[in-house]
Structures are given as structure tokens and as C-alpha cells.
Image 1: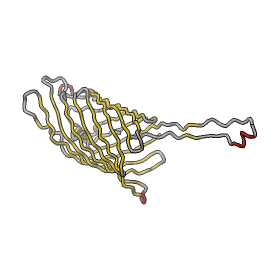
Image 2: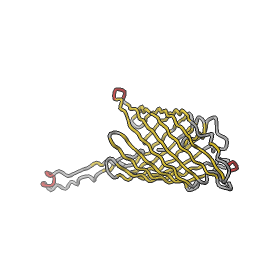
Image 3: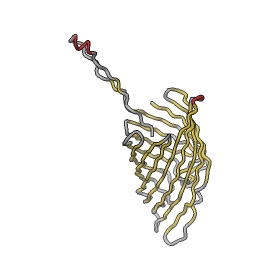
Length: 266
């Protein structure tokens, strides 16, 4: 999910001192602002759909659209399974989201946001929700070329938190006009109402991590092609209902994920 903010570019126009001394009647043109917004369209294909260490599907098409204006970002991310669908999982998934980046200084920013997960075709009889809502709060800290992002989420439908830490850095490849972007993430979550329409409530908890690298290739002034690879692993993932023994979530596993994206910025 998603930090593509553009800074405003201002064109300044000024009247020369000589013109003022000459008391000419000409008026300096008003400053012209370049719009401080952008629209980013990103169709992506993934070899596996993994979410917090849990496999939710096989090869999938994952398009997204994001509108950025100053510190605001508003978008929609979606998932459409292409094959090897997981029974009961929604086809499609459509997730509107938004965030606001409060910049403290050159190295520190705070980002509150939310994601509204929507699963219109989820199998409710199997305990799948058709919608959940998850606010979040992230802190971005950059030091010595590294970017660290601790982030906390709370899902008001699943009734539980997720805590996550991401570290990222880039290695320039100047001779090739690109770079290698490395990212690592570790997280844990605990939900107390993980299944819909159940009594007693079903608890679900688990840990996960992932490590990956991506490489962008600029193909036009407003377009780039991105190839990415990641390994993601879920473990210590269990379900438990009432006094019944806990059962392992078999969808939590280790998977290799290849991602192909085309990023268009308008």
C-alpha cells in the first residue's frame, strides 16, 4: 500500500527596479502556480497475493489509482484473482484509502491514514467479512540513506491491532539509469473477532516478515516499469474459538512473490 507526494513548484514574477523608477504603467504578471497535485495510475501483476504473511490467492491483477495533492493522498487499490483462487476469498477486493503526511523536518514525518477493505463477493457463510475498516498511524524517519517506518493499525471490525516495522534503502545504478530499492518488513497482529457471524468469537493472531528488492526502468517522462521480487513468510498463526483448542492457519506460509508494475503519473 502505497507515498507519492509532489512538492509545489512556484513560478515567481517580479517587476524590475528600473521599471519602478521609470514609473511605467506596465503591470508585472501575477505569479503562476504549477498545480501541486498528481494522478498516479499503476496496473500491477503479482505471482501470489500475500497479505501479512497469509496467502489470499494465486496470480492476480492489482490495479491502483492515487490522487496526490500536497500532503494528502487518496486512492483505491484492488485485487482481481487470475487463477488458483482461494475458496471464499472475494473476487474482486476493492480498498479505498487515504493519508495525510505531516512533515516535522527533513528527516521526520508523521502519517495518519486509513484503509477501507471491501470484499463484495466474500463467502459470509464461511466466516468472511464483506468489509472492514482500519485506521493507521506511521512515522517515517530517514538517517544515513535508510528509511525506517514503524506503523500501527487498528481494525474496528476484526477488533484488533497490527504493529509493523519497515526498513528501506536504495542503491543507485548510475551507469544504467536506475537503482535497486531494498525493503524489509516485520509485523504482528492479534484480532479478537476474525470471523463473521460466529459465536463464540474467533480469535486470530500471527507474525510475518518479508524482504524484497525492486528496480524501476524509466520509459517516458511520466512513466516507468518496475520489476520486483520479495519473499514473505507468515508463522505462529493460529485461530481459536472459545475454549476449543487453537488451530493452525495453514494459509500462513512462506512464498516467493514476483511483481510487475507500470506506473503512469499525470
